[in-house]
Length: 490
Image (cartoon, rainbow, N blue to C red; front, side, top):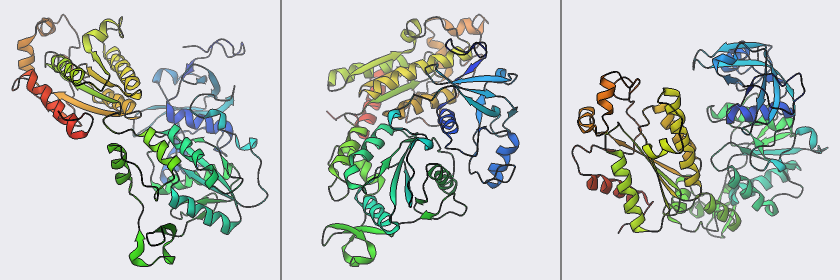
């Protein structure tokens, strides 16, 4: 693919590539100067040194690999235009090295970047700032780089530490989680509770595959780039770019009904904050979050981000061999949910999707994967808006099913149902004659015959329709949905 029109003539013939979410976030931070001293994506030696010892090859401390994965066919290019998901060119990569990751076998490109335009994709982009766009304080600056809302405990600790340092507060919501919009809104909702002059700057930092120490180190580098002199964190880590300040332990004093340092509370009056599991359970049941734990404004944002299960968007994804009965069970489930009422139901059956959403695709592995991704995208959109998406493709590959699970789980809930009817039973049914054609060599790469079906190890429910009727299979799925709280019992 070549670069879009609107570029200088010298760049229009260059190939283009759209990085994944984590690499797009890295690209934005590289272009903004947040990842200083890095000026581009790392090569094989720098990456190996960072992984082994947390330093670049020249000895500069750096906590995490910042790399760019590409298809193998792009590894021969000397320059590459990197673009956002809408095809807007953001930067040109001057390729200094093409290399293969020995762990994942993924192909990587390394080299410096030439900025073309500032990124404009992603939520709350109008609030984002480059480090050189903010006014630096002459005094101490306390950074709070967080992926979580600030409840009453954290607000009290933050105010105490900031007052002790006489510091301005820099609040950095770290984007890249499942509920970015809710995170930023929840932090904006407590703006009046924060010290005067607090700046809130969202930062795209998609990092979920590193340990806590390296995560703290990375947050300290980001904080330092924005002019912070201190970082508020739960534990000190050696080698941070700015000193880490750990807050004094706080708890809720049930006697006087305030949050304050544990040292000032009588032991029998100490009440701990809600755990994340307890908080999630309240939200799942649609119950109010207690005022002693968080502010009403934050509670409202959390309730929007995590609706009660009986109102939350859901995808029920059936997978199984051709002829396993998954379409029959999926249709029966859709009918049962419509009859119960209360939920909007969309059925994405394999054959119907093939004729409409995926018309023109072949049955090659690449096109079958693309078909499942398209189904997953539509299911995620249905789920995002609170509906129930019921999908019934073969979906033979574990990696593609996992990709769909990730897409949907970012906006709602996902249930995987493996219709595990044995191959010989499916083949006996063969109402379309597909297995016979596959055995005769007329259909190449046919799942179960000439191409593998990777049985799911992460299924929430397994159904063998050779041992139960379609009605019984539907009842098993309904029982799971009732037990999980997604639908109410009859």
